[in-house]
Length: 120
Image (cartoon, rainbow, N blue to C red; front, side):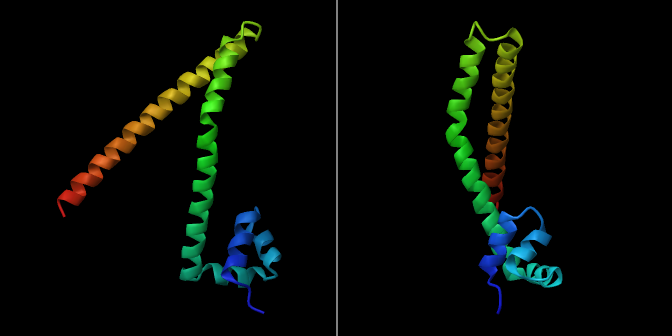
């Protein structure tokens, strides 16, 4: 019985090691690695991983507002220990700086892409 590509992909994405994924599929490690080396399966796995990460990123992005609000509440809580309040303020500042840097980099990439595609 041939194990489907989808079963292998599901096993890879739901197990922490390839050894465990191979077992989950009922394949030997050699069979498993042979299948993983096939270009079509590699492409499908790459797509599945990207989709999984994009889904996780969406969930995280949906919670960013709540996280910032929680940090702001802690920062303003006069009964919270000073170090806790400082950590919350520091977290907000650090994340704001990272976000600004990311937005700047994305803008630069977009400009480079426009320049490249205009010159083609």
